[in-house]
Length: 141
Image 1 (tube, rainbow, N blue to C red):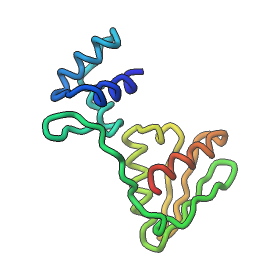
Image 2 (cartoon, rainbow, N blue to C red):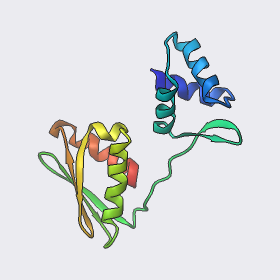
Image 3 (cartoon, rainbow, N blue to C red):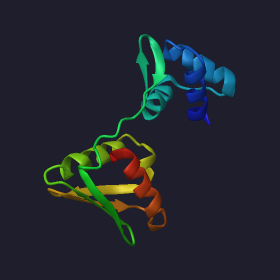
């Protein structure tokens, strides 16, 4: 609810400070919002200040399809990412950073193990294996 409201405000209004955004969110939601909570939500939503105004930054894919060869599902709860040699560890670090940042990916992924050209991704809930694959694809492809 708060995240959708923040996105709507950022898209439709020129907000130049977190204080102003907190006030606007509180006004529209009728709920108290801590500045620290707002700050975390801005980071999660990829909202940054540009020329003094908060704007939604489009996430850029980290790697091209030429770097990622494929992502396979290995039931009951593994994703296997095959890369060109030498980049699997870097990609696993990006996935792990998303987990540490408590992104939506964090709720699905338990962790990663990477070699030279292969990453094993452990999914917490086998029923969410396909959802986790989609989220990983969105992040790295």
